[in-house]
Image (tube, rainbow, N blue to C red; front, side, top):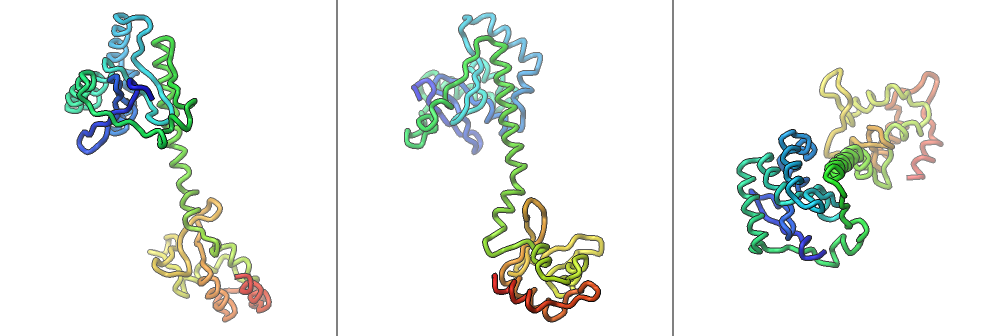
Length: 270
């Protein structure tokens, strides 16, 4: 990380915003805070006219937008772009942002540089290399592409939450209730939840509602099993269910009786 790209953080209403030592501003993080999409700023006709006029009065090699990956990643804007962008986000924030950029250019801002041992730049230098577009159009396309990738990553995280919950709820000694009940031969599979309601393990808020597990008990709890919602039964719960099975508390298929030998085998595996 050279001196011009060193990160600078500044607090605004309890939220940290990122700048660089050359005055560039992290547009992606700011937009996320204000609940807006950077792509809509670039799609605005007034913005496009401003950027085209800006490019027309600047050297051909001048860059005003940059997409970065890794640590400090996102869409970064030149100070000339950051000010109108911050105004688009919030007028009061724009005044603060303008003053912040002025401080940076004057050298009054304090640098907060990531330590080499903790920096993703050191660990993954190829990822940190900024993508430098050759034309203004390429810069716009690159910025839009970066925003799309960030949005896709956030969507993937949301989709993985049920799987994460499943991993958190299932322990080594636990099993899905449906599969465990199937291991006890003869139980009427369409009736076992109603039986567990009668035994005080499950309940329904009203007649048409789905079954729920009582909280605070150590037999059953609601969870995810192989991507599907089910009840998770602990070892303690398994022992109690085997007891109810042998005691005849479950509705059995016509002509079937509890099998003591199988129950003992299941119990021995716990």
